Length: 101
Length: 101
Length: 101
Length: 101
Image 1 (tube, rainbow over the protein chains, first blue to last red):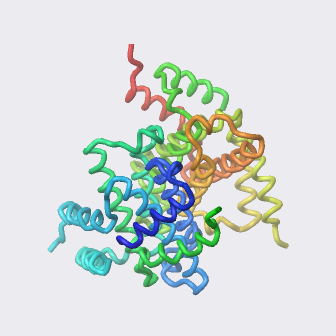
Image 2 (spheres, chains in turn yellow, orange, brown, red; image 1 turned 135 degrees about the vertical axis):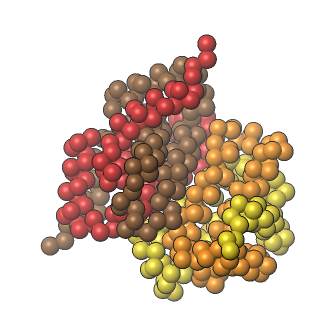
């Protein structure tokens, strides 16, 4: 995670893109990439989407990468780490949806 | 990352939610969460979105957590790791957007 | 359509919201509302989504209304009418996807 | 509106696409098209997005058309008319956001 964060910071700096990377714009870009990932599964039945061919898997991998890139950059604007945020959210979710039994 | 993946697998298993977690459904949920994150910045100017108060930052952290949770679960369906996918995508992006100079 | 456009213009003017209604912000709001509409169907199977109860139908109607409101306001910024735009796009789509046979 | 609805019904029937057009799938497609429309404004400042060149306006018109097409088809599955739904929602919104005076 640290390595991804520092690689991204360098990538953005080398291209002088920081000026465009307000949290508002990064949140839009994240949402656009999430839609591109969803588009892959748009006309599949749920069951079909569980087994995909190698080309589709590579396409999924690229879009997952794009979503992760924007999520990491957006989180970084507020000194947040997506993995830690996920762990904290899981604790809240466990309270909200207790295991029945 | 490995810890998040195994915690999520256990969380889903305990609640018997695997039946709902087709890649298609997870991609929809990811997109819905990305929209909830974006909604926070909807009516702000770009500049305003760079400095938020403590309550807004906590809200952002929760939504970042939700996006990361669904991204990790979706990627896991295809044995993909979001961080590795991001690193691979950055190599492609570097070729697409060379540093001028 | 004309009546909806003029009602919306009056609604916005009375609340002095025009300052927030840049095309960029309206496009974000449209995307957020489309996600809220999609969320209703998130965990349903495709077949299930074809028959919904009365309360769900009312929920769908409200979200369809919100999407239409933002779409009409956004289109209006460029003197566009969503219905005419749809007719024009159908002509392009018919060329792209000819009827086989 | 009636003409758009009947043209769309014919378009879908001629291509035998009804089988793919569950409300769930149409809601996904609507969300993907809304994201494509939003993508046009992604890196613009709010003020910039208010004046666009002729090529961008044509692009906006096409994406507005796509959003309207899927919104109309989705609404039609529940015998809903997007324009009527917008009028009804405006009445609710007027109650929620009264004009200050």
